[in-house]
View 1 (cartoon, helix red, strand yellow):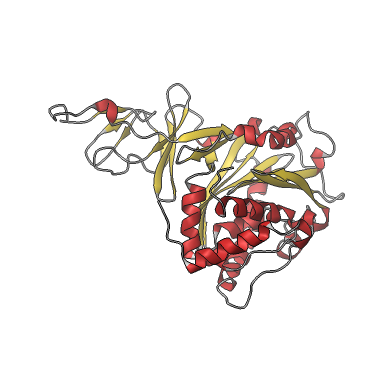
View 2 (cartoon, helix red, strand yellow):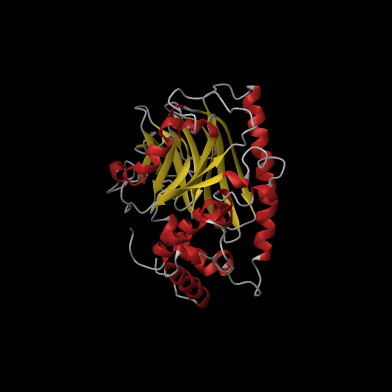
Length: 380
């Protein structure tokens, strides 16, 4: 899809090009159109959300054969299933007959049946039955399977690449894997999931999750006493990701249970990372909090988020307490980000300086990624 180059789109792309010429010492924020322009939002949908690796959810949502969930990404209806062989499939959730939905919500099925004309598909998308179609000249069941998208499971998270042209994801995250290894996210059980839509641009939430500068002001009672702003430490990132460590206050009690591989330093901090463009997660000593972000509108972000940990019972008091904590600081962030979106519809703000590297260096990494992806024709 070729997009018409508009004045707003050109203004934002010019601002991104200018950022590429700045040093880290000169790092600045983007102008409001970066978060409010409908035309630039359409460019992101085509160049990022169709061409990059986008996280859809956690492997714990489909632990058994027949398990599935549905979701949406830039207009594509998606069906994520685990087939009889245990394979994870990311399929088009659109019937090959007249284009209705094949499945809705989540659950467990032996097959997927379109409720419009009862075309039936196997868990891997293979067409099994098409009532009364055998007499149709030229009908070939093998040509009517559900399209399967390119997908990968990395660190228990399910990623999709809609256009099928992206390089494999895992090799691009090898260094990040090393940083996360001793936390053993792959051994953690999914304990809580939820969905929401916030009235803010997806990049606002993406950036907010990845900086510790706002903790003391936005979360004075929920997060600042535990992970104070002044103890945030940036991790050197790479072209596909950025990260920082949020260290715990020395007087804050240990956050076990700890995996036996964890060092004393790892027991005292949470690693927060962003796999570009829009997957953010915080892996603490005991729990993992993750957000899969999707653009619902230029000023709305769809969120599929969850919590994983070494415990097995979602009703465990410790799990319930952590979910309540997450709901509390999520609510605090939502209020600030929705007012931020309102404020960004202004003509009287252009750009401001970013805070030091330990506090907002991750935002600079993200903006540099955006500049590279949206001001050139390269997929690198």
